[in-house]
Length: 182
Image 1: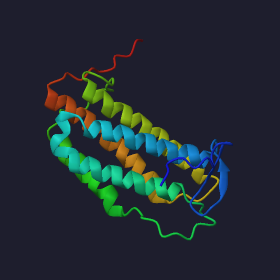
Image 2: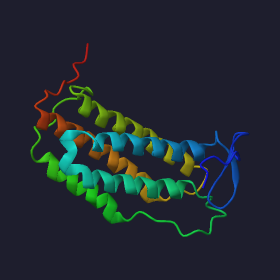
Image 3: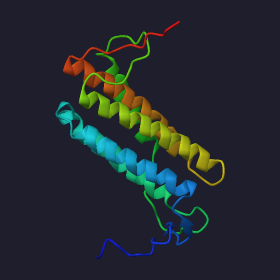
């Protein structure tokens, strides 16, 4: 099977269900951002500090593919059976955050991203996740987006914040707090 089809050469692509849409459409931007997020999660997963968390991060990547397939489907025309999210997927993130938070110092200020390249990758993933969440909300204002998609992306961005703090803690990197200039 060839990767290139040439069907997108004029700036259009097909959704699941066959509907042709401009590549600049909000739906394409939304699932493209989820794909970008998935790549960033892969980079986070590949950091040595996350060796024990690789199965969890792969699970997250699998769920992002689930979200991407839902967003890539025309809600009006697609008859294809697609994988779906479950409340347990959100609960998994919440349980992991609770487990990781136990070993972290109390958060008393805003934290500036950085301190170590691995930590910075997690912060970038968090920011891309927030963008994906905003785009999913925007898309949901004009077309169907399952509520659990937005909930999962919201919880995932929280998880990535806790993960970045955990990584910094495990690496012995000082968290740099924001000091407001007044």
